[in-house]
Amino acid sequence: MYNQVAAKTVEALRQIVGAENVLVGTEEMEPYTHDEVVGLRADPEVVVRVTSAAQVSEVLKLAQRERVPVTPRGAGDGLSGGAVPVQGGIVMTLEKMNRILEIDKQNLMVTVEPGVITGDIHRAVEAEGLFYPPDPASLDSCFIGGNIAEDAGGPRAVKYGVTRDYVCGLEAVLPSGEIITCGGKLVKNVTGYNLIQLLVGSEGTLAVVTRIILRLLPLPKLQVDLLVPYDDFQAAADTVSDIIFHRIVPTTIEFMEQDSILAVERLLEKDLPYDDAAAHLLIQLDGNRQDGIDADLDVVGELCLEHGARDVLVAPDRRTRDRLWEGRRAIVDALNHASPINHLEDVVVPRAEIPALLKGVKAIAGRQGVRIVCFGHAGDGNVHVTVLKDQVRDERWEGLVPAVSEELYRLSLSLGGMITGEHGVGATRRQYLPLALDEAQIAVMRRIKAAFDPNHILNPGKIFP
Ligand SMILES: Cc1cc2nc3c(=O)[nH]c(=O)nc-3n(C[C@H](O)[C@H](O)[C@H](O)COP(=O)(O)OP(=O)(O)OC[C@H]3O[C@@H](n4cnc5c(N)ncnc54)[C@H](O)[C@@H]3O)c2cc1C
Image 1 (cartoon, rainbow, N blue to C red):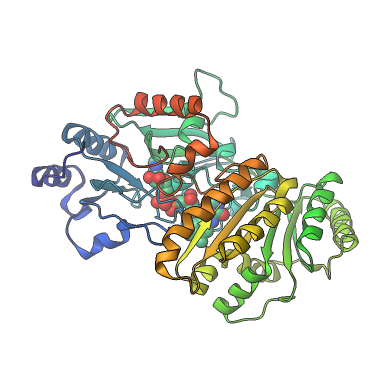
Image 2 (cartoon, protein in one colour):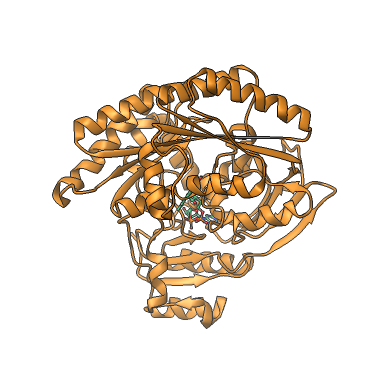
């Protein structure tokens, strides 16, 4: 279906982006063979580093003519294989388009290129007293373009929503090479179909995003974080429902099971408080008035203790707060350290179904005879379920991963959930799409893909089974 990248195509790419921005047959290509999915690799035939929308357009036009696939790539932090060139061809990396173009304090908007590290946007706007809430745990390395393509979430989704809630404008290059500009610095806009929201979360399969306008909020003046250990996860989950029932919406409500706490301790080589607890909740409250935040803190603290929390540790300042969060941010790395071969899932259920999900996960672990560790976003129902290979033999592991994934997806769907909350379908979950979506939905999605990309040159082998 696709052609190989010919020598003349490589030469044409050099003409478009400059010879120094074309990698072919060198060791420097290795980082572009994978993202953060353990065990998934594919070699690109050529890597191009683009620096403008015009270059993206020319590369896509060339790829159309030559019928070679193009895989857009951000930082390669993805957890569903989205940036892996499973059909070979060209990897187009956006790493050099990394400028924050404007912080508009009158309109509360920031304009950025796709290769800006998300944490750099946070820091730049916070220096101006402004706030970009989406905060994937990978924020110090992933790019905003990758966040747009995956509709990345993060702990603050409970109160502030996810990436798509902040995107007001996009410049994007269609697979035909046409450059489109959608939206702008607009809080309202109902002019035609909402292509922005179609492109957000489209996993690099519909267009290459080259410029982004994000809505900002005033930076909340006050923040307080609580670490709350429990002997029983059900009690922790009941606390979450009760806090929200009391009309308090924390900024974050994260949970970590004991196995993940112990894995973090081993990685960081330091003790975490209450490491013998069955689960920790990490709750953050923010606001602008000290009396308001104190009142919420009192209610939340009391509710935690009423539900059997062993303690409520409060971190009022940045240093203590960073210490509490260091553990949560290190979990993915810690589990990779504990079992370098593992499989990370990302199911999402209605918040109130988390205890049922966790109970079901433990039953799956028992049935399949494998260690499964859970952590994630208790406040929004998104649970990261990690299956650890440990000492499981290679031959058994091969069959075990799909068996566990399928049981897990069926469990999540039976609870009103979905198969992925923030990591995307990508290459790793595509065969399971029919479990989650009915035929008519998949058929409409395929027609949308064909309308954007009739020759299927952009990021093939993703999303669709
Ligand atoms: C330790 C760790 C923690 C994580 N925590 C979270 C979390 O809390 N929340 C969360 O949502 N995710 C999380 N992730 C997953 C990952 O960070 C996100 O999916 C992130 O959005 C990926 O961005 P990236 O720049 O690395 O994209 P990549 O992995 O490079 O690419 C991801 C997808 O985006 C496409 N793409 C990239 N740039 C563009 C572009 N400019 N135009 C069109 N398509 C493009 C690619 O083709 C690919 O399909 C975590 C990952 C790690 C390793």
